[in-house]
Image 1 (cartoon, rainbow, N blue to C red):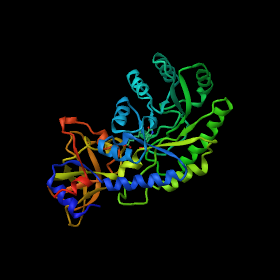
Image 2: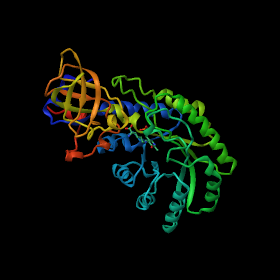
Image 3: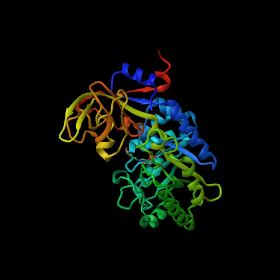
Image 4: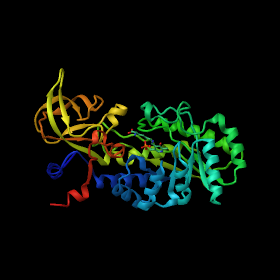
Length: 388
Ligand code: LLP
């Protein structure tokens, strides 16, 4: 929902652009802090969801850590001022160059995804006369019941170490001198809306942790990743995601050992609702069943509908007319460049402003300049609304 003042400001700007509600983001961060601190849990922000400097800075100021998946994300986290001892570095394919960035930054952990990666980190740490702190990402074989492109915790997925490799893993860990095992890491998928999935994860973690302890590998921490979903269909629904229920579930079902820390890596649930993509209608064109509303934003700004058949609520924020049906499409030269088919919108004409909601996560970061398009700018509520 946008105020009249906001819509007035939008009308003066070149479209498309991302609009971030910084007050909304701060409210979400407050809530996450309140609910996680009830249990002493440690939250890292998964930078992959949105790595915009200003937003990162706000998130850092709340004291959260960072979850990075590339050397450049590690560098960015440090530049923004995240505490290096709160930086977790995950990723199934860390290059030598990226491992060196992590070692040079003295990060909290490398979340290792294969036995070979552990050996390489050990070798590179040895060359620097260091001991690298690591966690092992385990593939827990838990079904996240989400889109198959963002399911990561099944044995068929490329992520993590599988249970049939544990014996070899234990042998390796006892042998290597330049890595130190701190914890276990899990992440089963993204946009998970059924909390039962996280209960399944907890039960698996309890079992896996026992195997490590039985083999004399005590753990300082467990990291359960991210994945909490948001309500894309009701962008103004304040009660979702339910952080209270989310953290309480881990408290109820995950058996932490004495002194053990529990870490989370939340991306989407932190930032998705704080951002919208604002575009203009270029043309209205007659289709067979519905009309096409051709926008000046496309899959170059928000690829989620094309890639994951994702739903984003689309609203005409200029019109007060009656409801019509539209196929809302972008200007890119392929048919996958469609935001939604046969959706209800207020009667729409050339020049109307269209808001594609809940675009704060995996929007701007996944943008491309395909067709040599310009990258969309970003505006922020605290700056836009204070100018005349
Ligand atoms: N930790 C790890 C190891 C991850 O791989 C991810 C996301 C996260 C944390 C954060 O998950 P979140 O809380 O945001 O669900 N581009 C896709 C989502 C890809 C998610 C990749 N991993 C989308 O637009 O839906």
